[in-house]
Figure 1 (cartoon, helix red, strand yellow):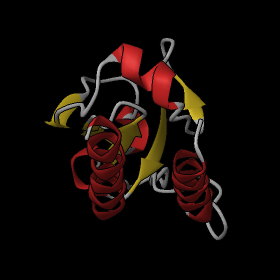
Figure 2: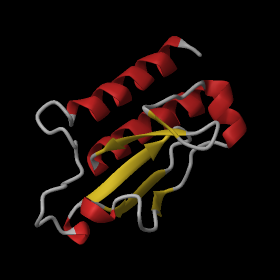
Figure 3: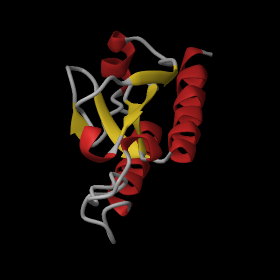
Length: 118
Protein backbone atom coordinates (compact mmCIF):
# COMPACT_ATOMS: atom_id res chain seq x y z
CA UNK A 1 0.00 0.00 0.00
CA UNK A 2 1.41 3.39 -0.92
CA UNK A 3 1.28 6.54 1.19
CA UNK A 4 -1.52 8.07 -0.90
CA UNK A 5 -3.80 5.09 -0.29
CA UNK A 6 -2.91 5.04 3.40
CA UNK A 7 -3.76 8.75 3.65
CA UNK A 8 -7.12 8.26 1.93
CA UNK A 9 -7.91 5.25 4.13
CA UNK A 10 -7.20 7.37 7.22
CA UNK A 11 -9.42 10.21 5.95
CA UNK A 12 -12.33 7.85 5.23
CA UNK A 13 -12.01 6.16 8.64
CA UNK A 14 -11.82 9.54 10.42
CA UNK A 15 -14.90 10.82 8.56
CA UNK A 16 -16.82 7.67 9.48
CA UNK A 17 -15.99 7.97 13.18
CA UNK A 18 -16.60 11.74 13.23
CA UNK A 19 -20.31 11.02 12.81
CA UNK A 20 -20.26 9.18 16.14
CA UNK A 21 -18.63 11.94 18.20
CA UNK A 22 -21.93 13.55 19.19
CA UNK A 23 -24.31 10.73 18.32
CA UNK A 24 -23.67 7.12 19.41
CA UNK A 25 -25.52 5.76 16.36
CA UNK A 26 -23.74 8.00 13.87
CA UNK A 27 -25.80 8.77 10.78
CA UNK A 28 -28.42 6.13 11.60
CA UNK A 29 -31.40 7.80 13.29
CA UNK A 30 -32.65 5.26 15.84
CA UNK A 31 -35.17 7.53 17.56
CA UNK A 32 -38.65 6.12 18.07
CA UNK A 33 -40.23 8.35 15.43
CA UNK A 34 -37.47 7.92 12.82
CA UNK A 35 -38.71 7.20 9.32
CA UNK A 36 -36.60 4.72 7.33
CA UNK A 37 -37.41 6.58 4.11
CA UNK A 38 -36.26 9.89 5.57
CA UNK A 39 -32.97 8.47 6.89
CA UNK A 40 -31.00 7.16 3.93
CA UNK A 41 -27.70 5.50 4.83
CA UNK A 42 -24.78 5.65 2.39
CA UNK A 43 -21.87 3.22 2.22
CA UNK A 44 -18.58 3.80 0.45
CA UNK A 45 -17.02 0.44 -0.36
CA UNK A 46 -13.31 -0.17 -0.80
CA UNK A 47 -13.82 -0.66 -4.56
CA UNK A 48 -15.40 2.79 -4.94
CA UNK A 49 -18.98 1.52 -5.07
CA UNK A 50 -21.45 3.86 -3.35
CA UNK A 51 -24.70 2.34 -2.10
CA UNK A 52 -27.73 3.51 -0.19
CA UNK A 53 -30.48 1.91 1.83
CA UNK A 54 -33.22 2.78 4.27
CA UNK A 55 -32.12 3.84 7.71
CA UNK A 56 -33.76 3.89 11.14
CA UNK A 57 -35.14 0.51 12.25
CA UNK A 58 -34.95 -0.81 8.64
CA UNK A 59 -31.18 -0.39 8.36
CA UNK A 60 -29.52 -3.64 7.17
CA UNK A 61 -32.94 -5.28 7.04
CA UNK A 62 -33.84 -4.10 3.54
CA UNK A 63 -32.25 -3.98 0.09
CA UNK A 64 -29.10 -2.03 -0.62
CA UNK A 65 -29.03 -0.13 -3.91
CA UNK A 66 -26.07 0.95 -6.05
CA UNK A 67 -25.71 4.68 -6.55
CA UNK A 68 -22.20 4.80 -8.07
CA UNK A 69 -20.43 1.91 -9.78
CA UNK A 70 -17.16 0.44 -8.50
CA UNK A 71 -13.98 2.06 -9.84
CA UNK A 72 -11.92 -1.14 -9.69
CA UNK A 73 -12.19 -4.91 -9.60
CA UNK A 74 -11.93 -7.01 -6.45
CA UNK A 75 -8.39 -7.96 -7.49
CA UNK A 76 -7.50 -4.26 -7.64
CA UNK A 77 -8.99 -3.66 -4.17
CA UNK A 78 -6.48 -6.13 -2.77
CA UNK A 79 -3.67 -4.70 -4.89
CA UNK A 80 -4.27 -1.06 -3.93
CA UNK A 81 -5.00 -1.76 -0.26
CA UNK A 82 -8.11 0.36 0.23
CA UNK A 83 -9.40 -0.65 3.68
CA UNK A 84 -12.22 1.08 5.52
CA UNK A 85 -14.00 0.56 8.84
CA UNK A 86 -16.48 -2.29 8.48
CA UNK A 87 -15.44 -5.60 6.94
CA UNK A 88 -17.73 -7.02 4.31
CA UNK A 89 -17.19 -10.07 2.11
CA UNK A 90 -13.42 -10.24 1.44
CA UNK A 91 -11.69 -8.20 0.10
CA UNK A 92 -14.30 -5.50 0.62
CA UNK A 93 -14.86 -3.13 3.50
CA UNK A 94 -16.99 0.00 3.81
CA UNK A 95 -17.59 3.16 5.78
CA UNK A 96 -20.88 4.86 6.62
CA UNK A 97 -20.67 8.44 5.35
CA UNK A 98 -22.80 11.24 3.97
CA UNK A 99 -23.52 11.18 0.26
CA UNK A 100 -21.22 14.17 -0.24
CA UNK A 101 -18.37 12.42 1.59
CA UNK A 102 -18.89 9.23 -0.42
CA UNK A 103 -18.67 11.12 -3.68
CA UNK A 104 -15.63 13.16 -2.65
CA UNK A 105 -13.67 10.13 -1.41
CA UNK A 106 -14.72 8.09 -4.45
CA UNK A 107 -13.33 10.85 -6.67
CA UNK A 108 -10.01 10.63 -4.81
CA UNK A 109 -10.01 6.85 -5.27
CA UNK A 110 -10.58 7.30 -9.00
CA UNK A 111 -7.64 9.72 -9.21
CA UNK A 112 -5.35 7.26 -7.40
CA UNK A 113 -6.38 4.38 -9.67
CA UNK A 114 -6.04 6.53 -12.80
CA UNK A 115 -2.56 7.79 -11.78
CA UNK A 116 -1.41 4.23 -11.19
CA UNK A 117 -2.60 3.03 -14.59
CA UNK A 118 -0.93 5.89 -16.48
